Amino acid sequence: MMKHLWLLFAQIFTALLALIFILATFKPQWLEGGPFSGIADFVGFGDSISTITIKESHIDPSSPNPGSYHEAVKRSMPAVVNIFISKNNSNKKSKSKALPPQHPQIPNPEDFNPNLGSGVIVSPEGLILTNEHVIEGADVIEVALADGRKTTATLIGSDPDTDLAVLRVQMPNLPKPITFGKIESVKVGDVVLAIGNPFGVGQTVTSGIVSALGRDHLGINTFENFIQTDAAINPGNSGGALVDTRGHLIGINTAIYSRSGGSMGIGFAIPVNTARDVMESIIKNGSVVRGWIGVEPMNISAEMASTLKISADGVLINGTLKGGPADKAGIQPGDVLKTINNKPVSNITQLLKQISEVPPGDKIKATINRKGKNLEIEIQVGKRPGPKKR
Image 1 (cartoon, rainbow, N blue to C red):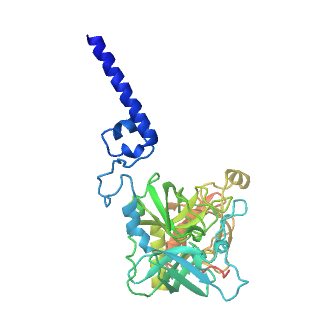
Image 2 (tube, one colour):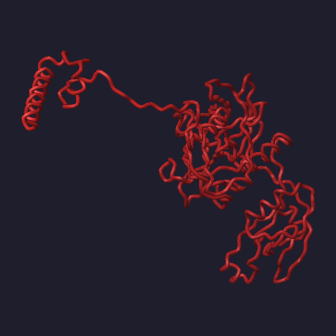
């Protein structure tokens, strides 16, 4: 009996499926919305989809995504501006910052006219920090804000030795100035964001990490102490902001190491503390005032020390400027300068930095080695001359 019932059920079910197949093929509209529409779709006979079900997120769209740097960008990006320049002499070309000839050249920003670089609003009074090479030789400097407004800027002063310049714009409702970070809190491996206008495509944010700190001996500037980062920095980013994940300014993007003209993951930014010191000196004095003793120093290699039979601990004085502070103090070519105010001097970069930090007019005590004997010499520091006009 049970076997006959199953056979009857199977026959009825088969007939029903056949009927659905015929209707789905020749009269599909009869099945739409009907009790068999789900069955028709299930068995694959439906030829259209009238409704779909999508699972939507219930997360508040205003809440930040995990790992997002949106808040940092939101705080810092409005303070980053684009800088354009024009020159009366069309034959006079701006020089880009370049590594020494044995290294790949840093791209010339003029190749991407009319956008030459970026800058950062750092005060409610409209002061803007940027690179000196961005505005070098400019007759007119124009600044475009993130909101699209444009205005002309006045050059307050520049410092080619660090490749920094200070501009000022005067217009209502300026964006909130960027917040300065503390360089002491910056560590290798920290996530950083580079903000600028690469290749003139528009304001852009790239991310990376701090690859190294204290990079020098690159031959870019006289005074070097760069933050190295792999955040993409391209022509047009020069003078823009390098910020931390809080949106605080930690550097001014200034140069890249490149074979192609674009980013290769090696970019350099001037630390915020250097930028701040230079800016404050320019505002106060019209230029950066640095100490100077008038010597031609040379780093000492082990081979040089062995050949010349001189101390390897220090910097060789290859020459002195006649009538300069060192010459007046009795320093002679061939002397090895070992310490300044009891602080060791191991290379030219260190020597320039230590001397530059001494106010002109102050006296320093220098230890030199002359023909194997250490001597103490007092030098009255002078004012470092400004760089020669390019």
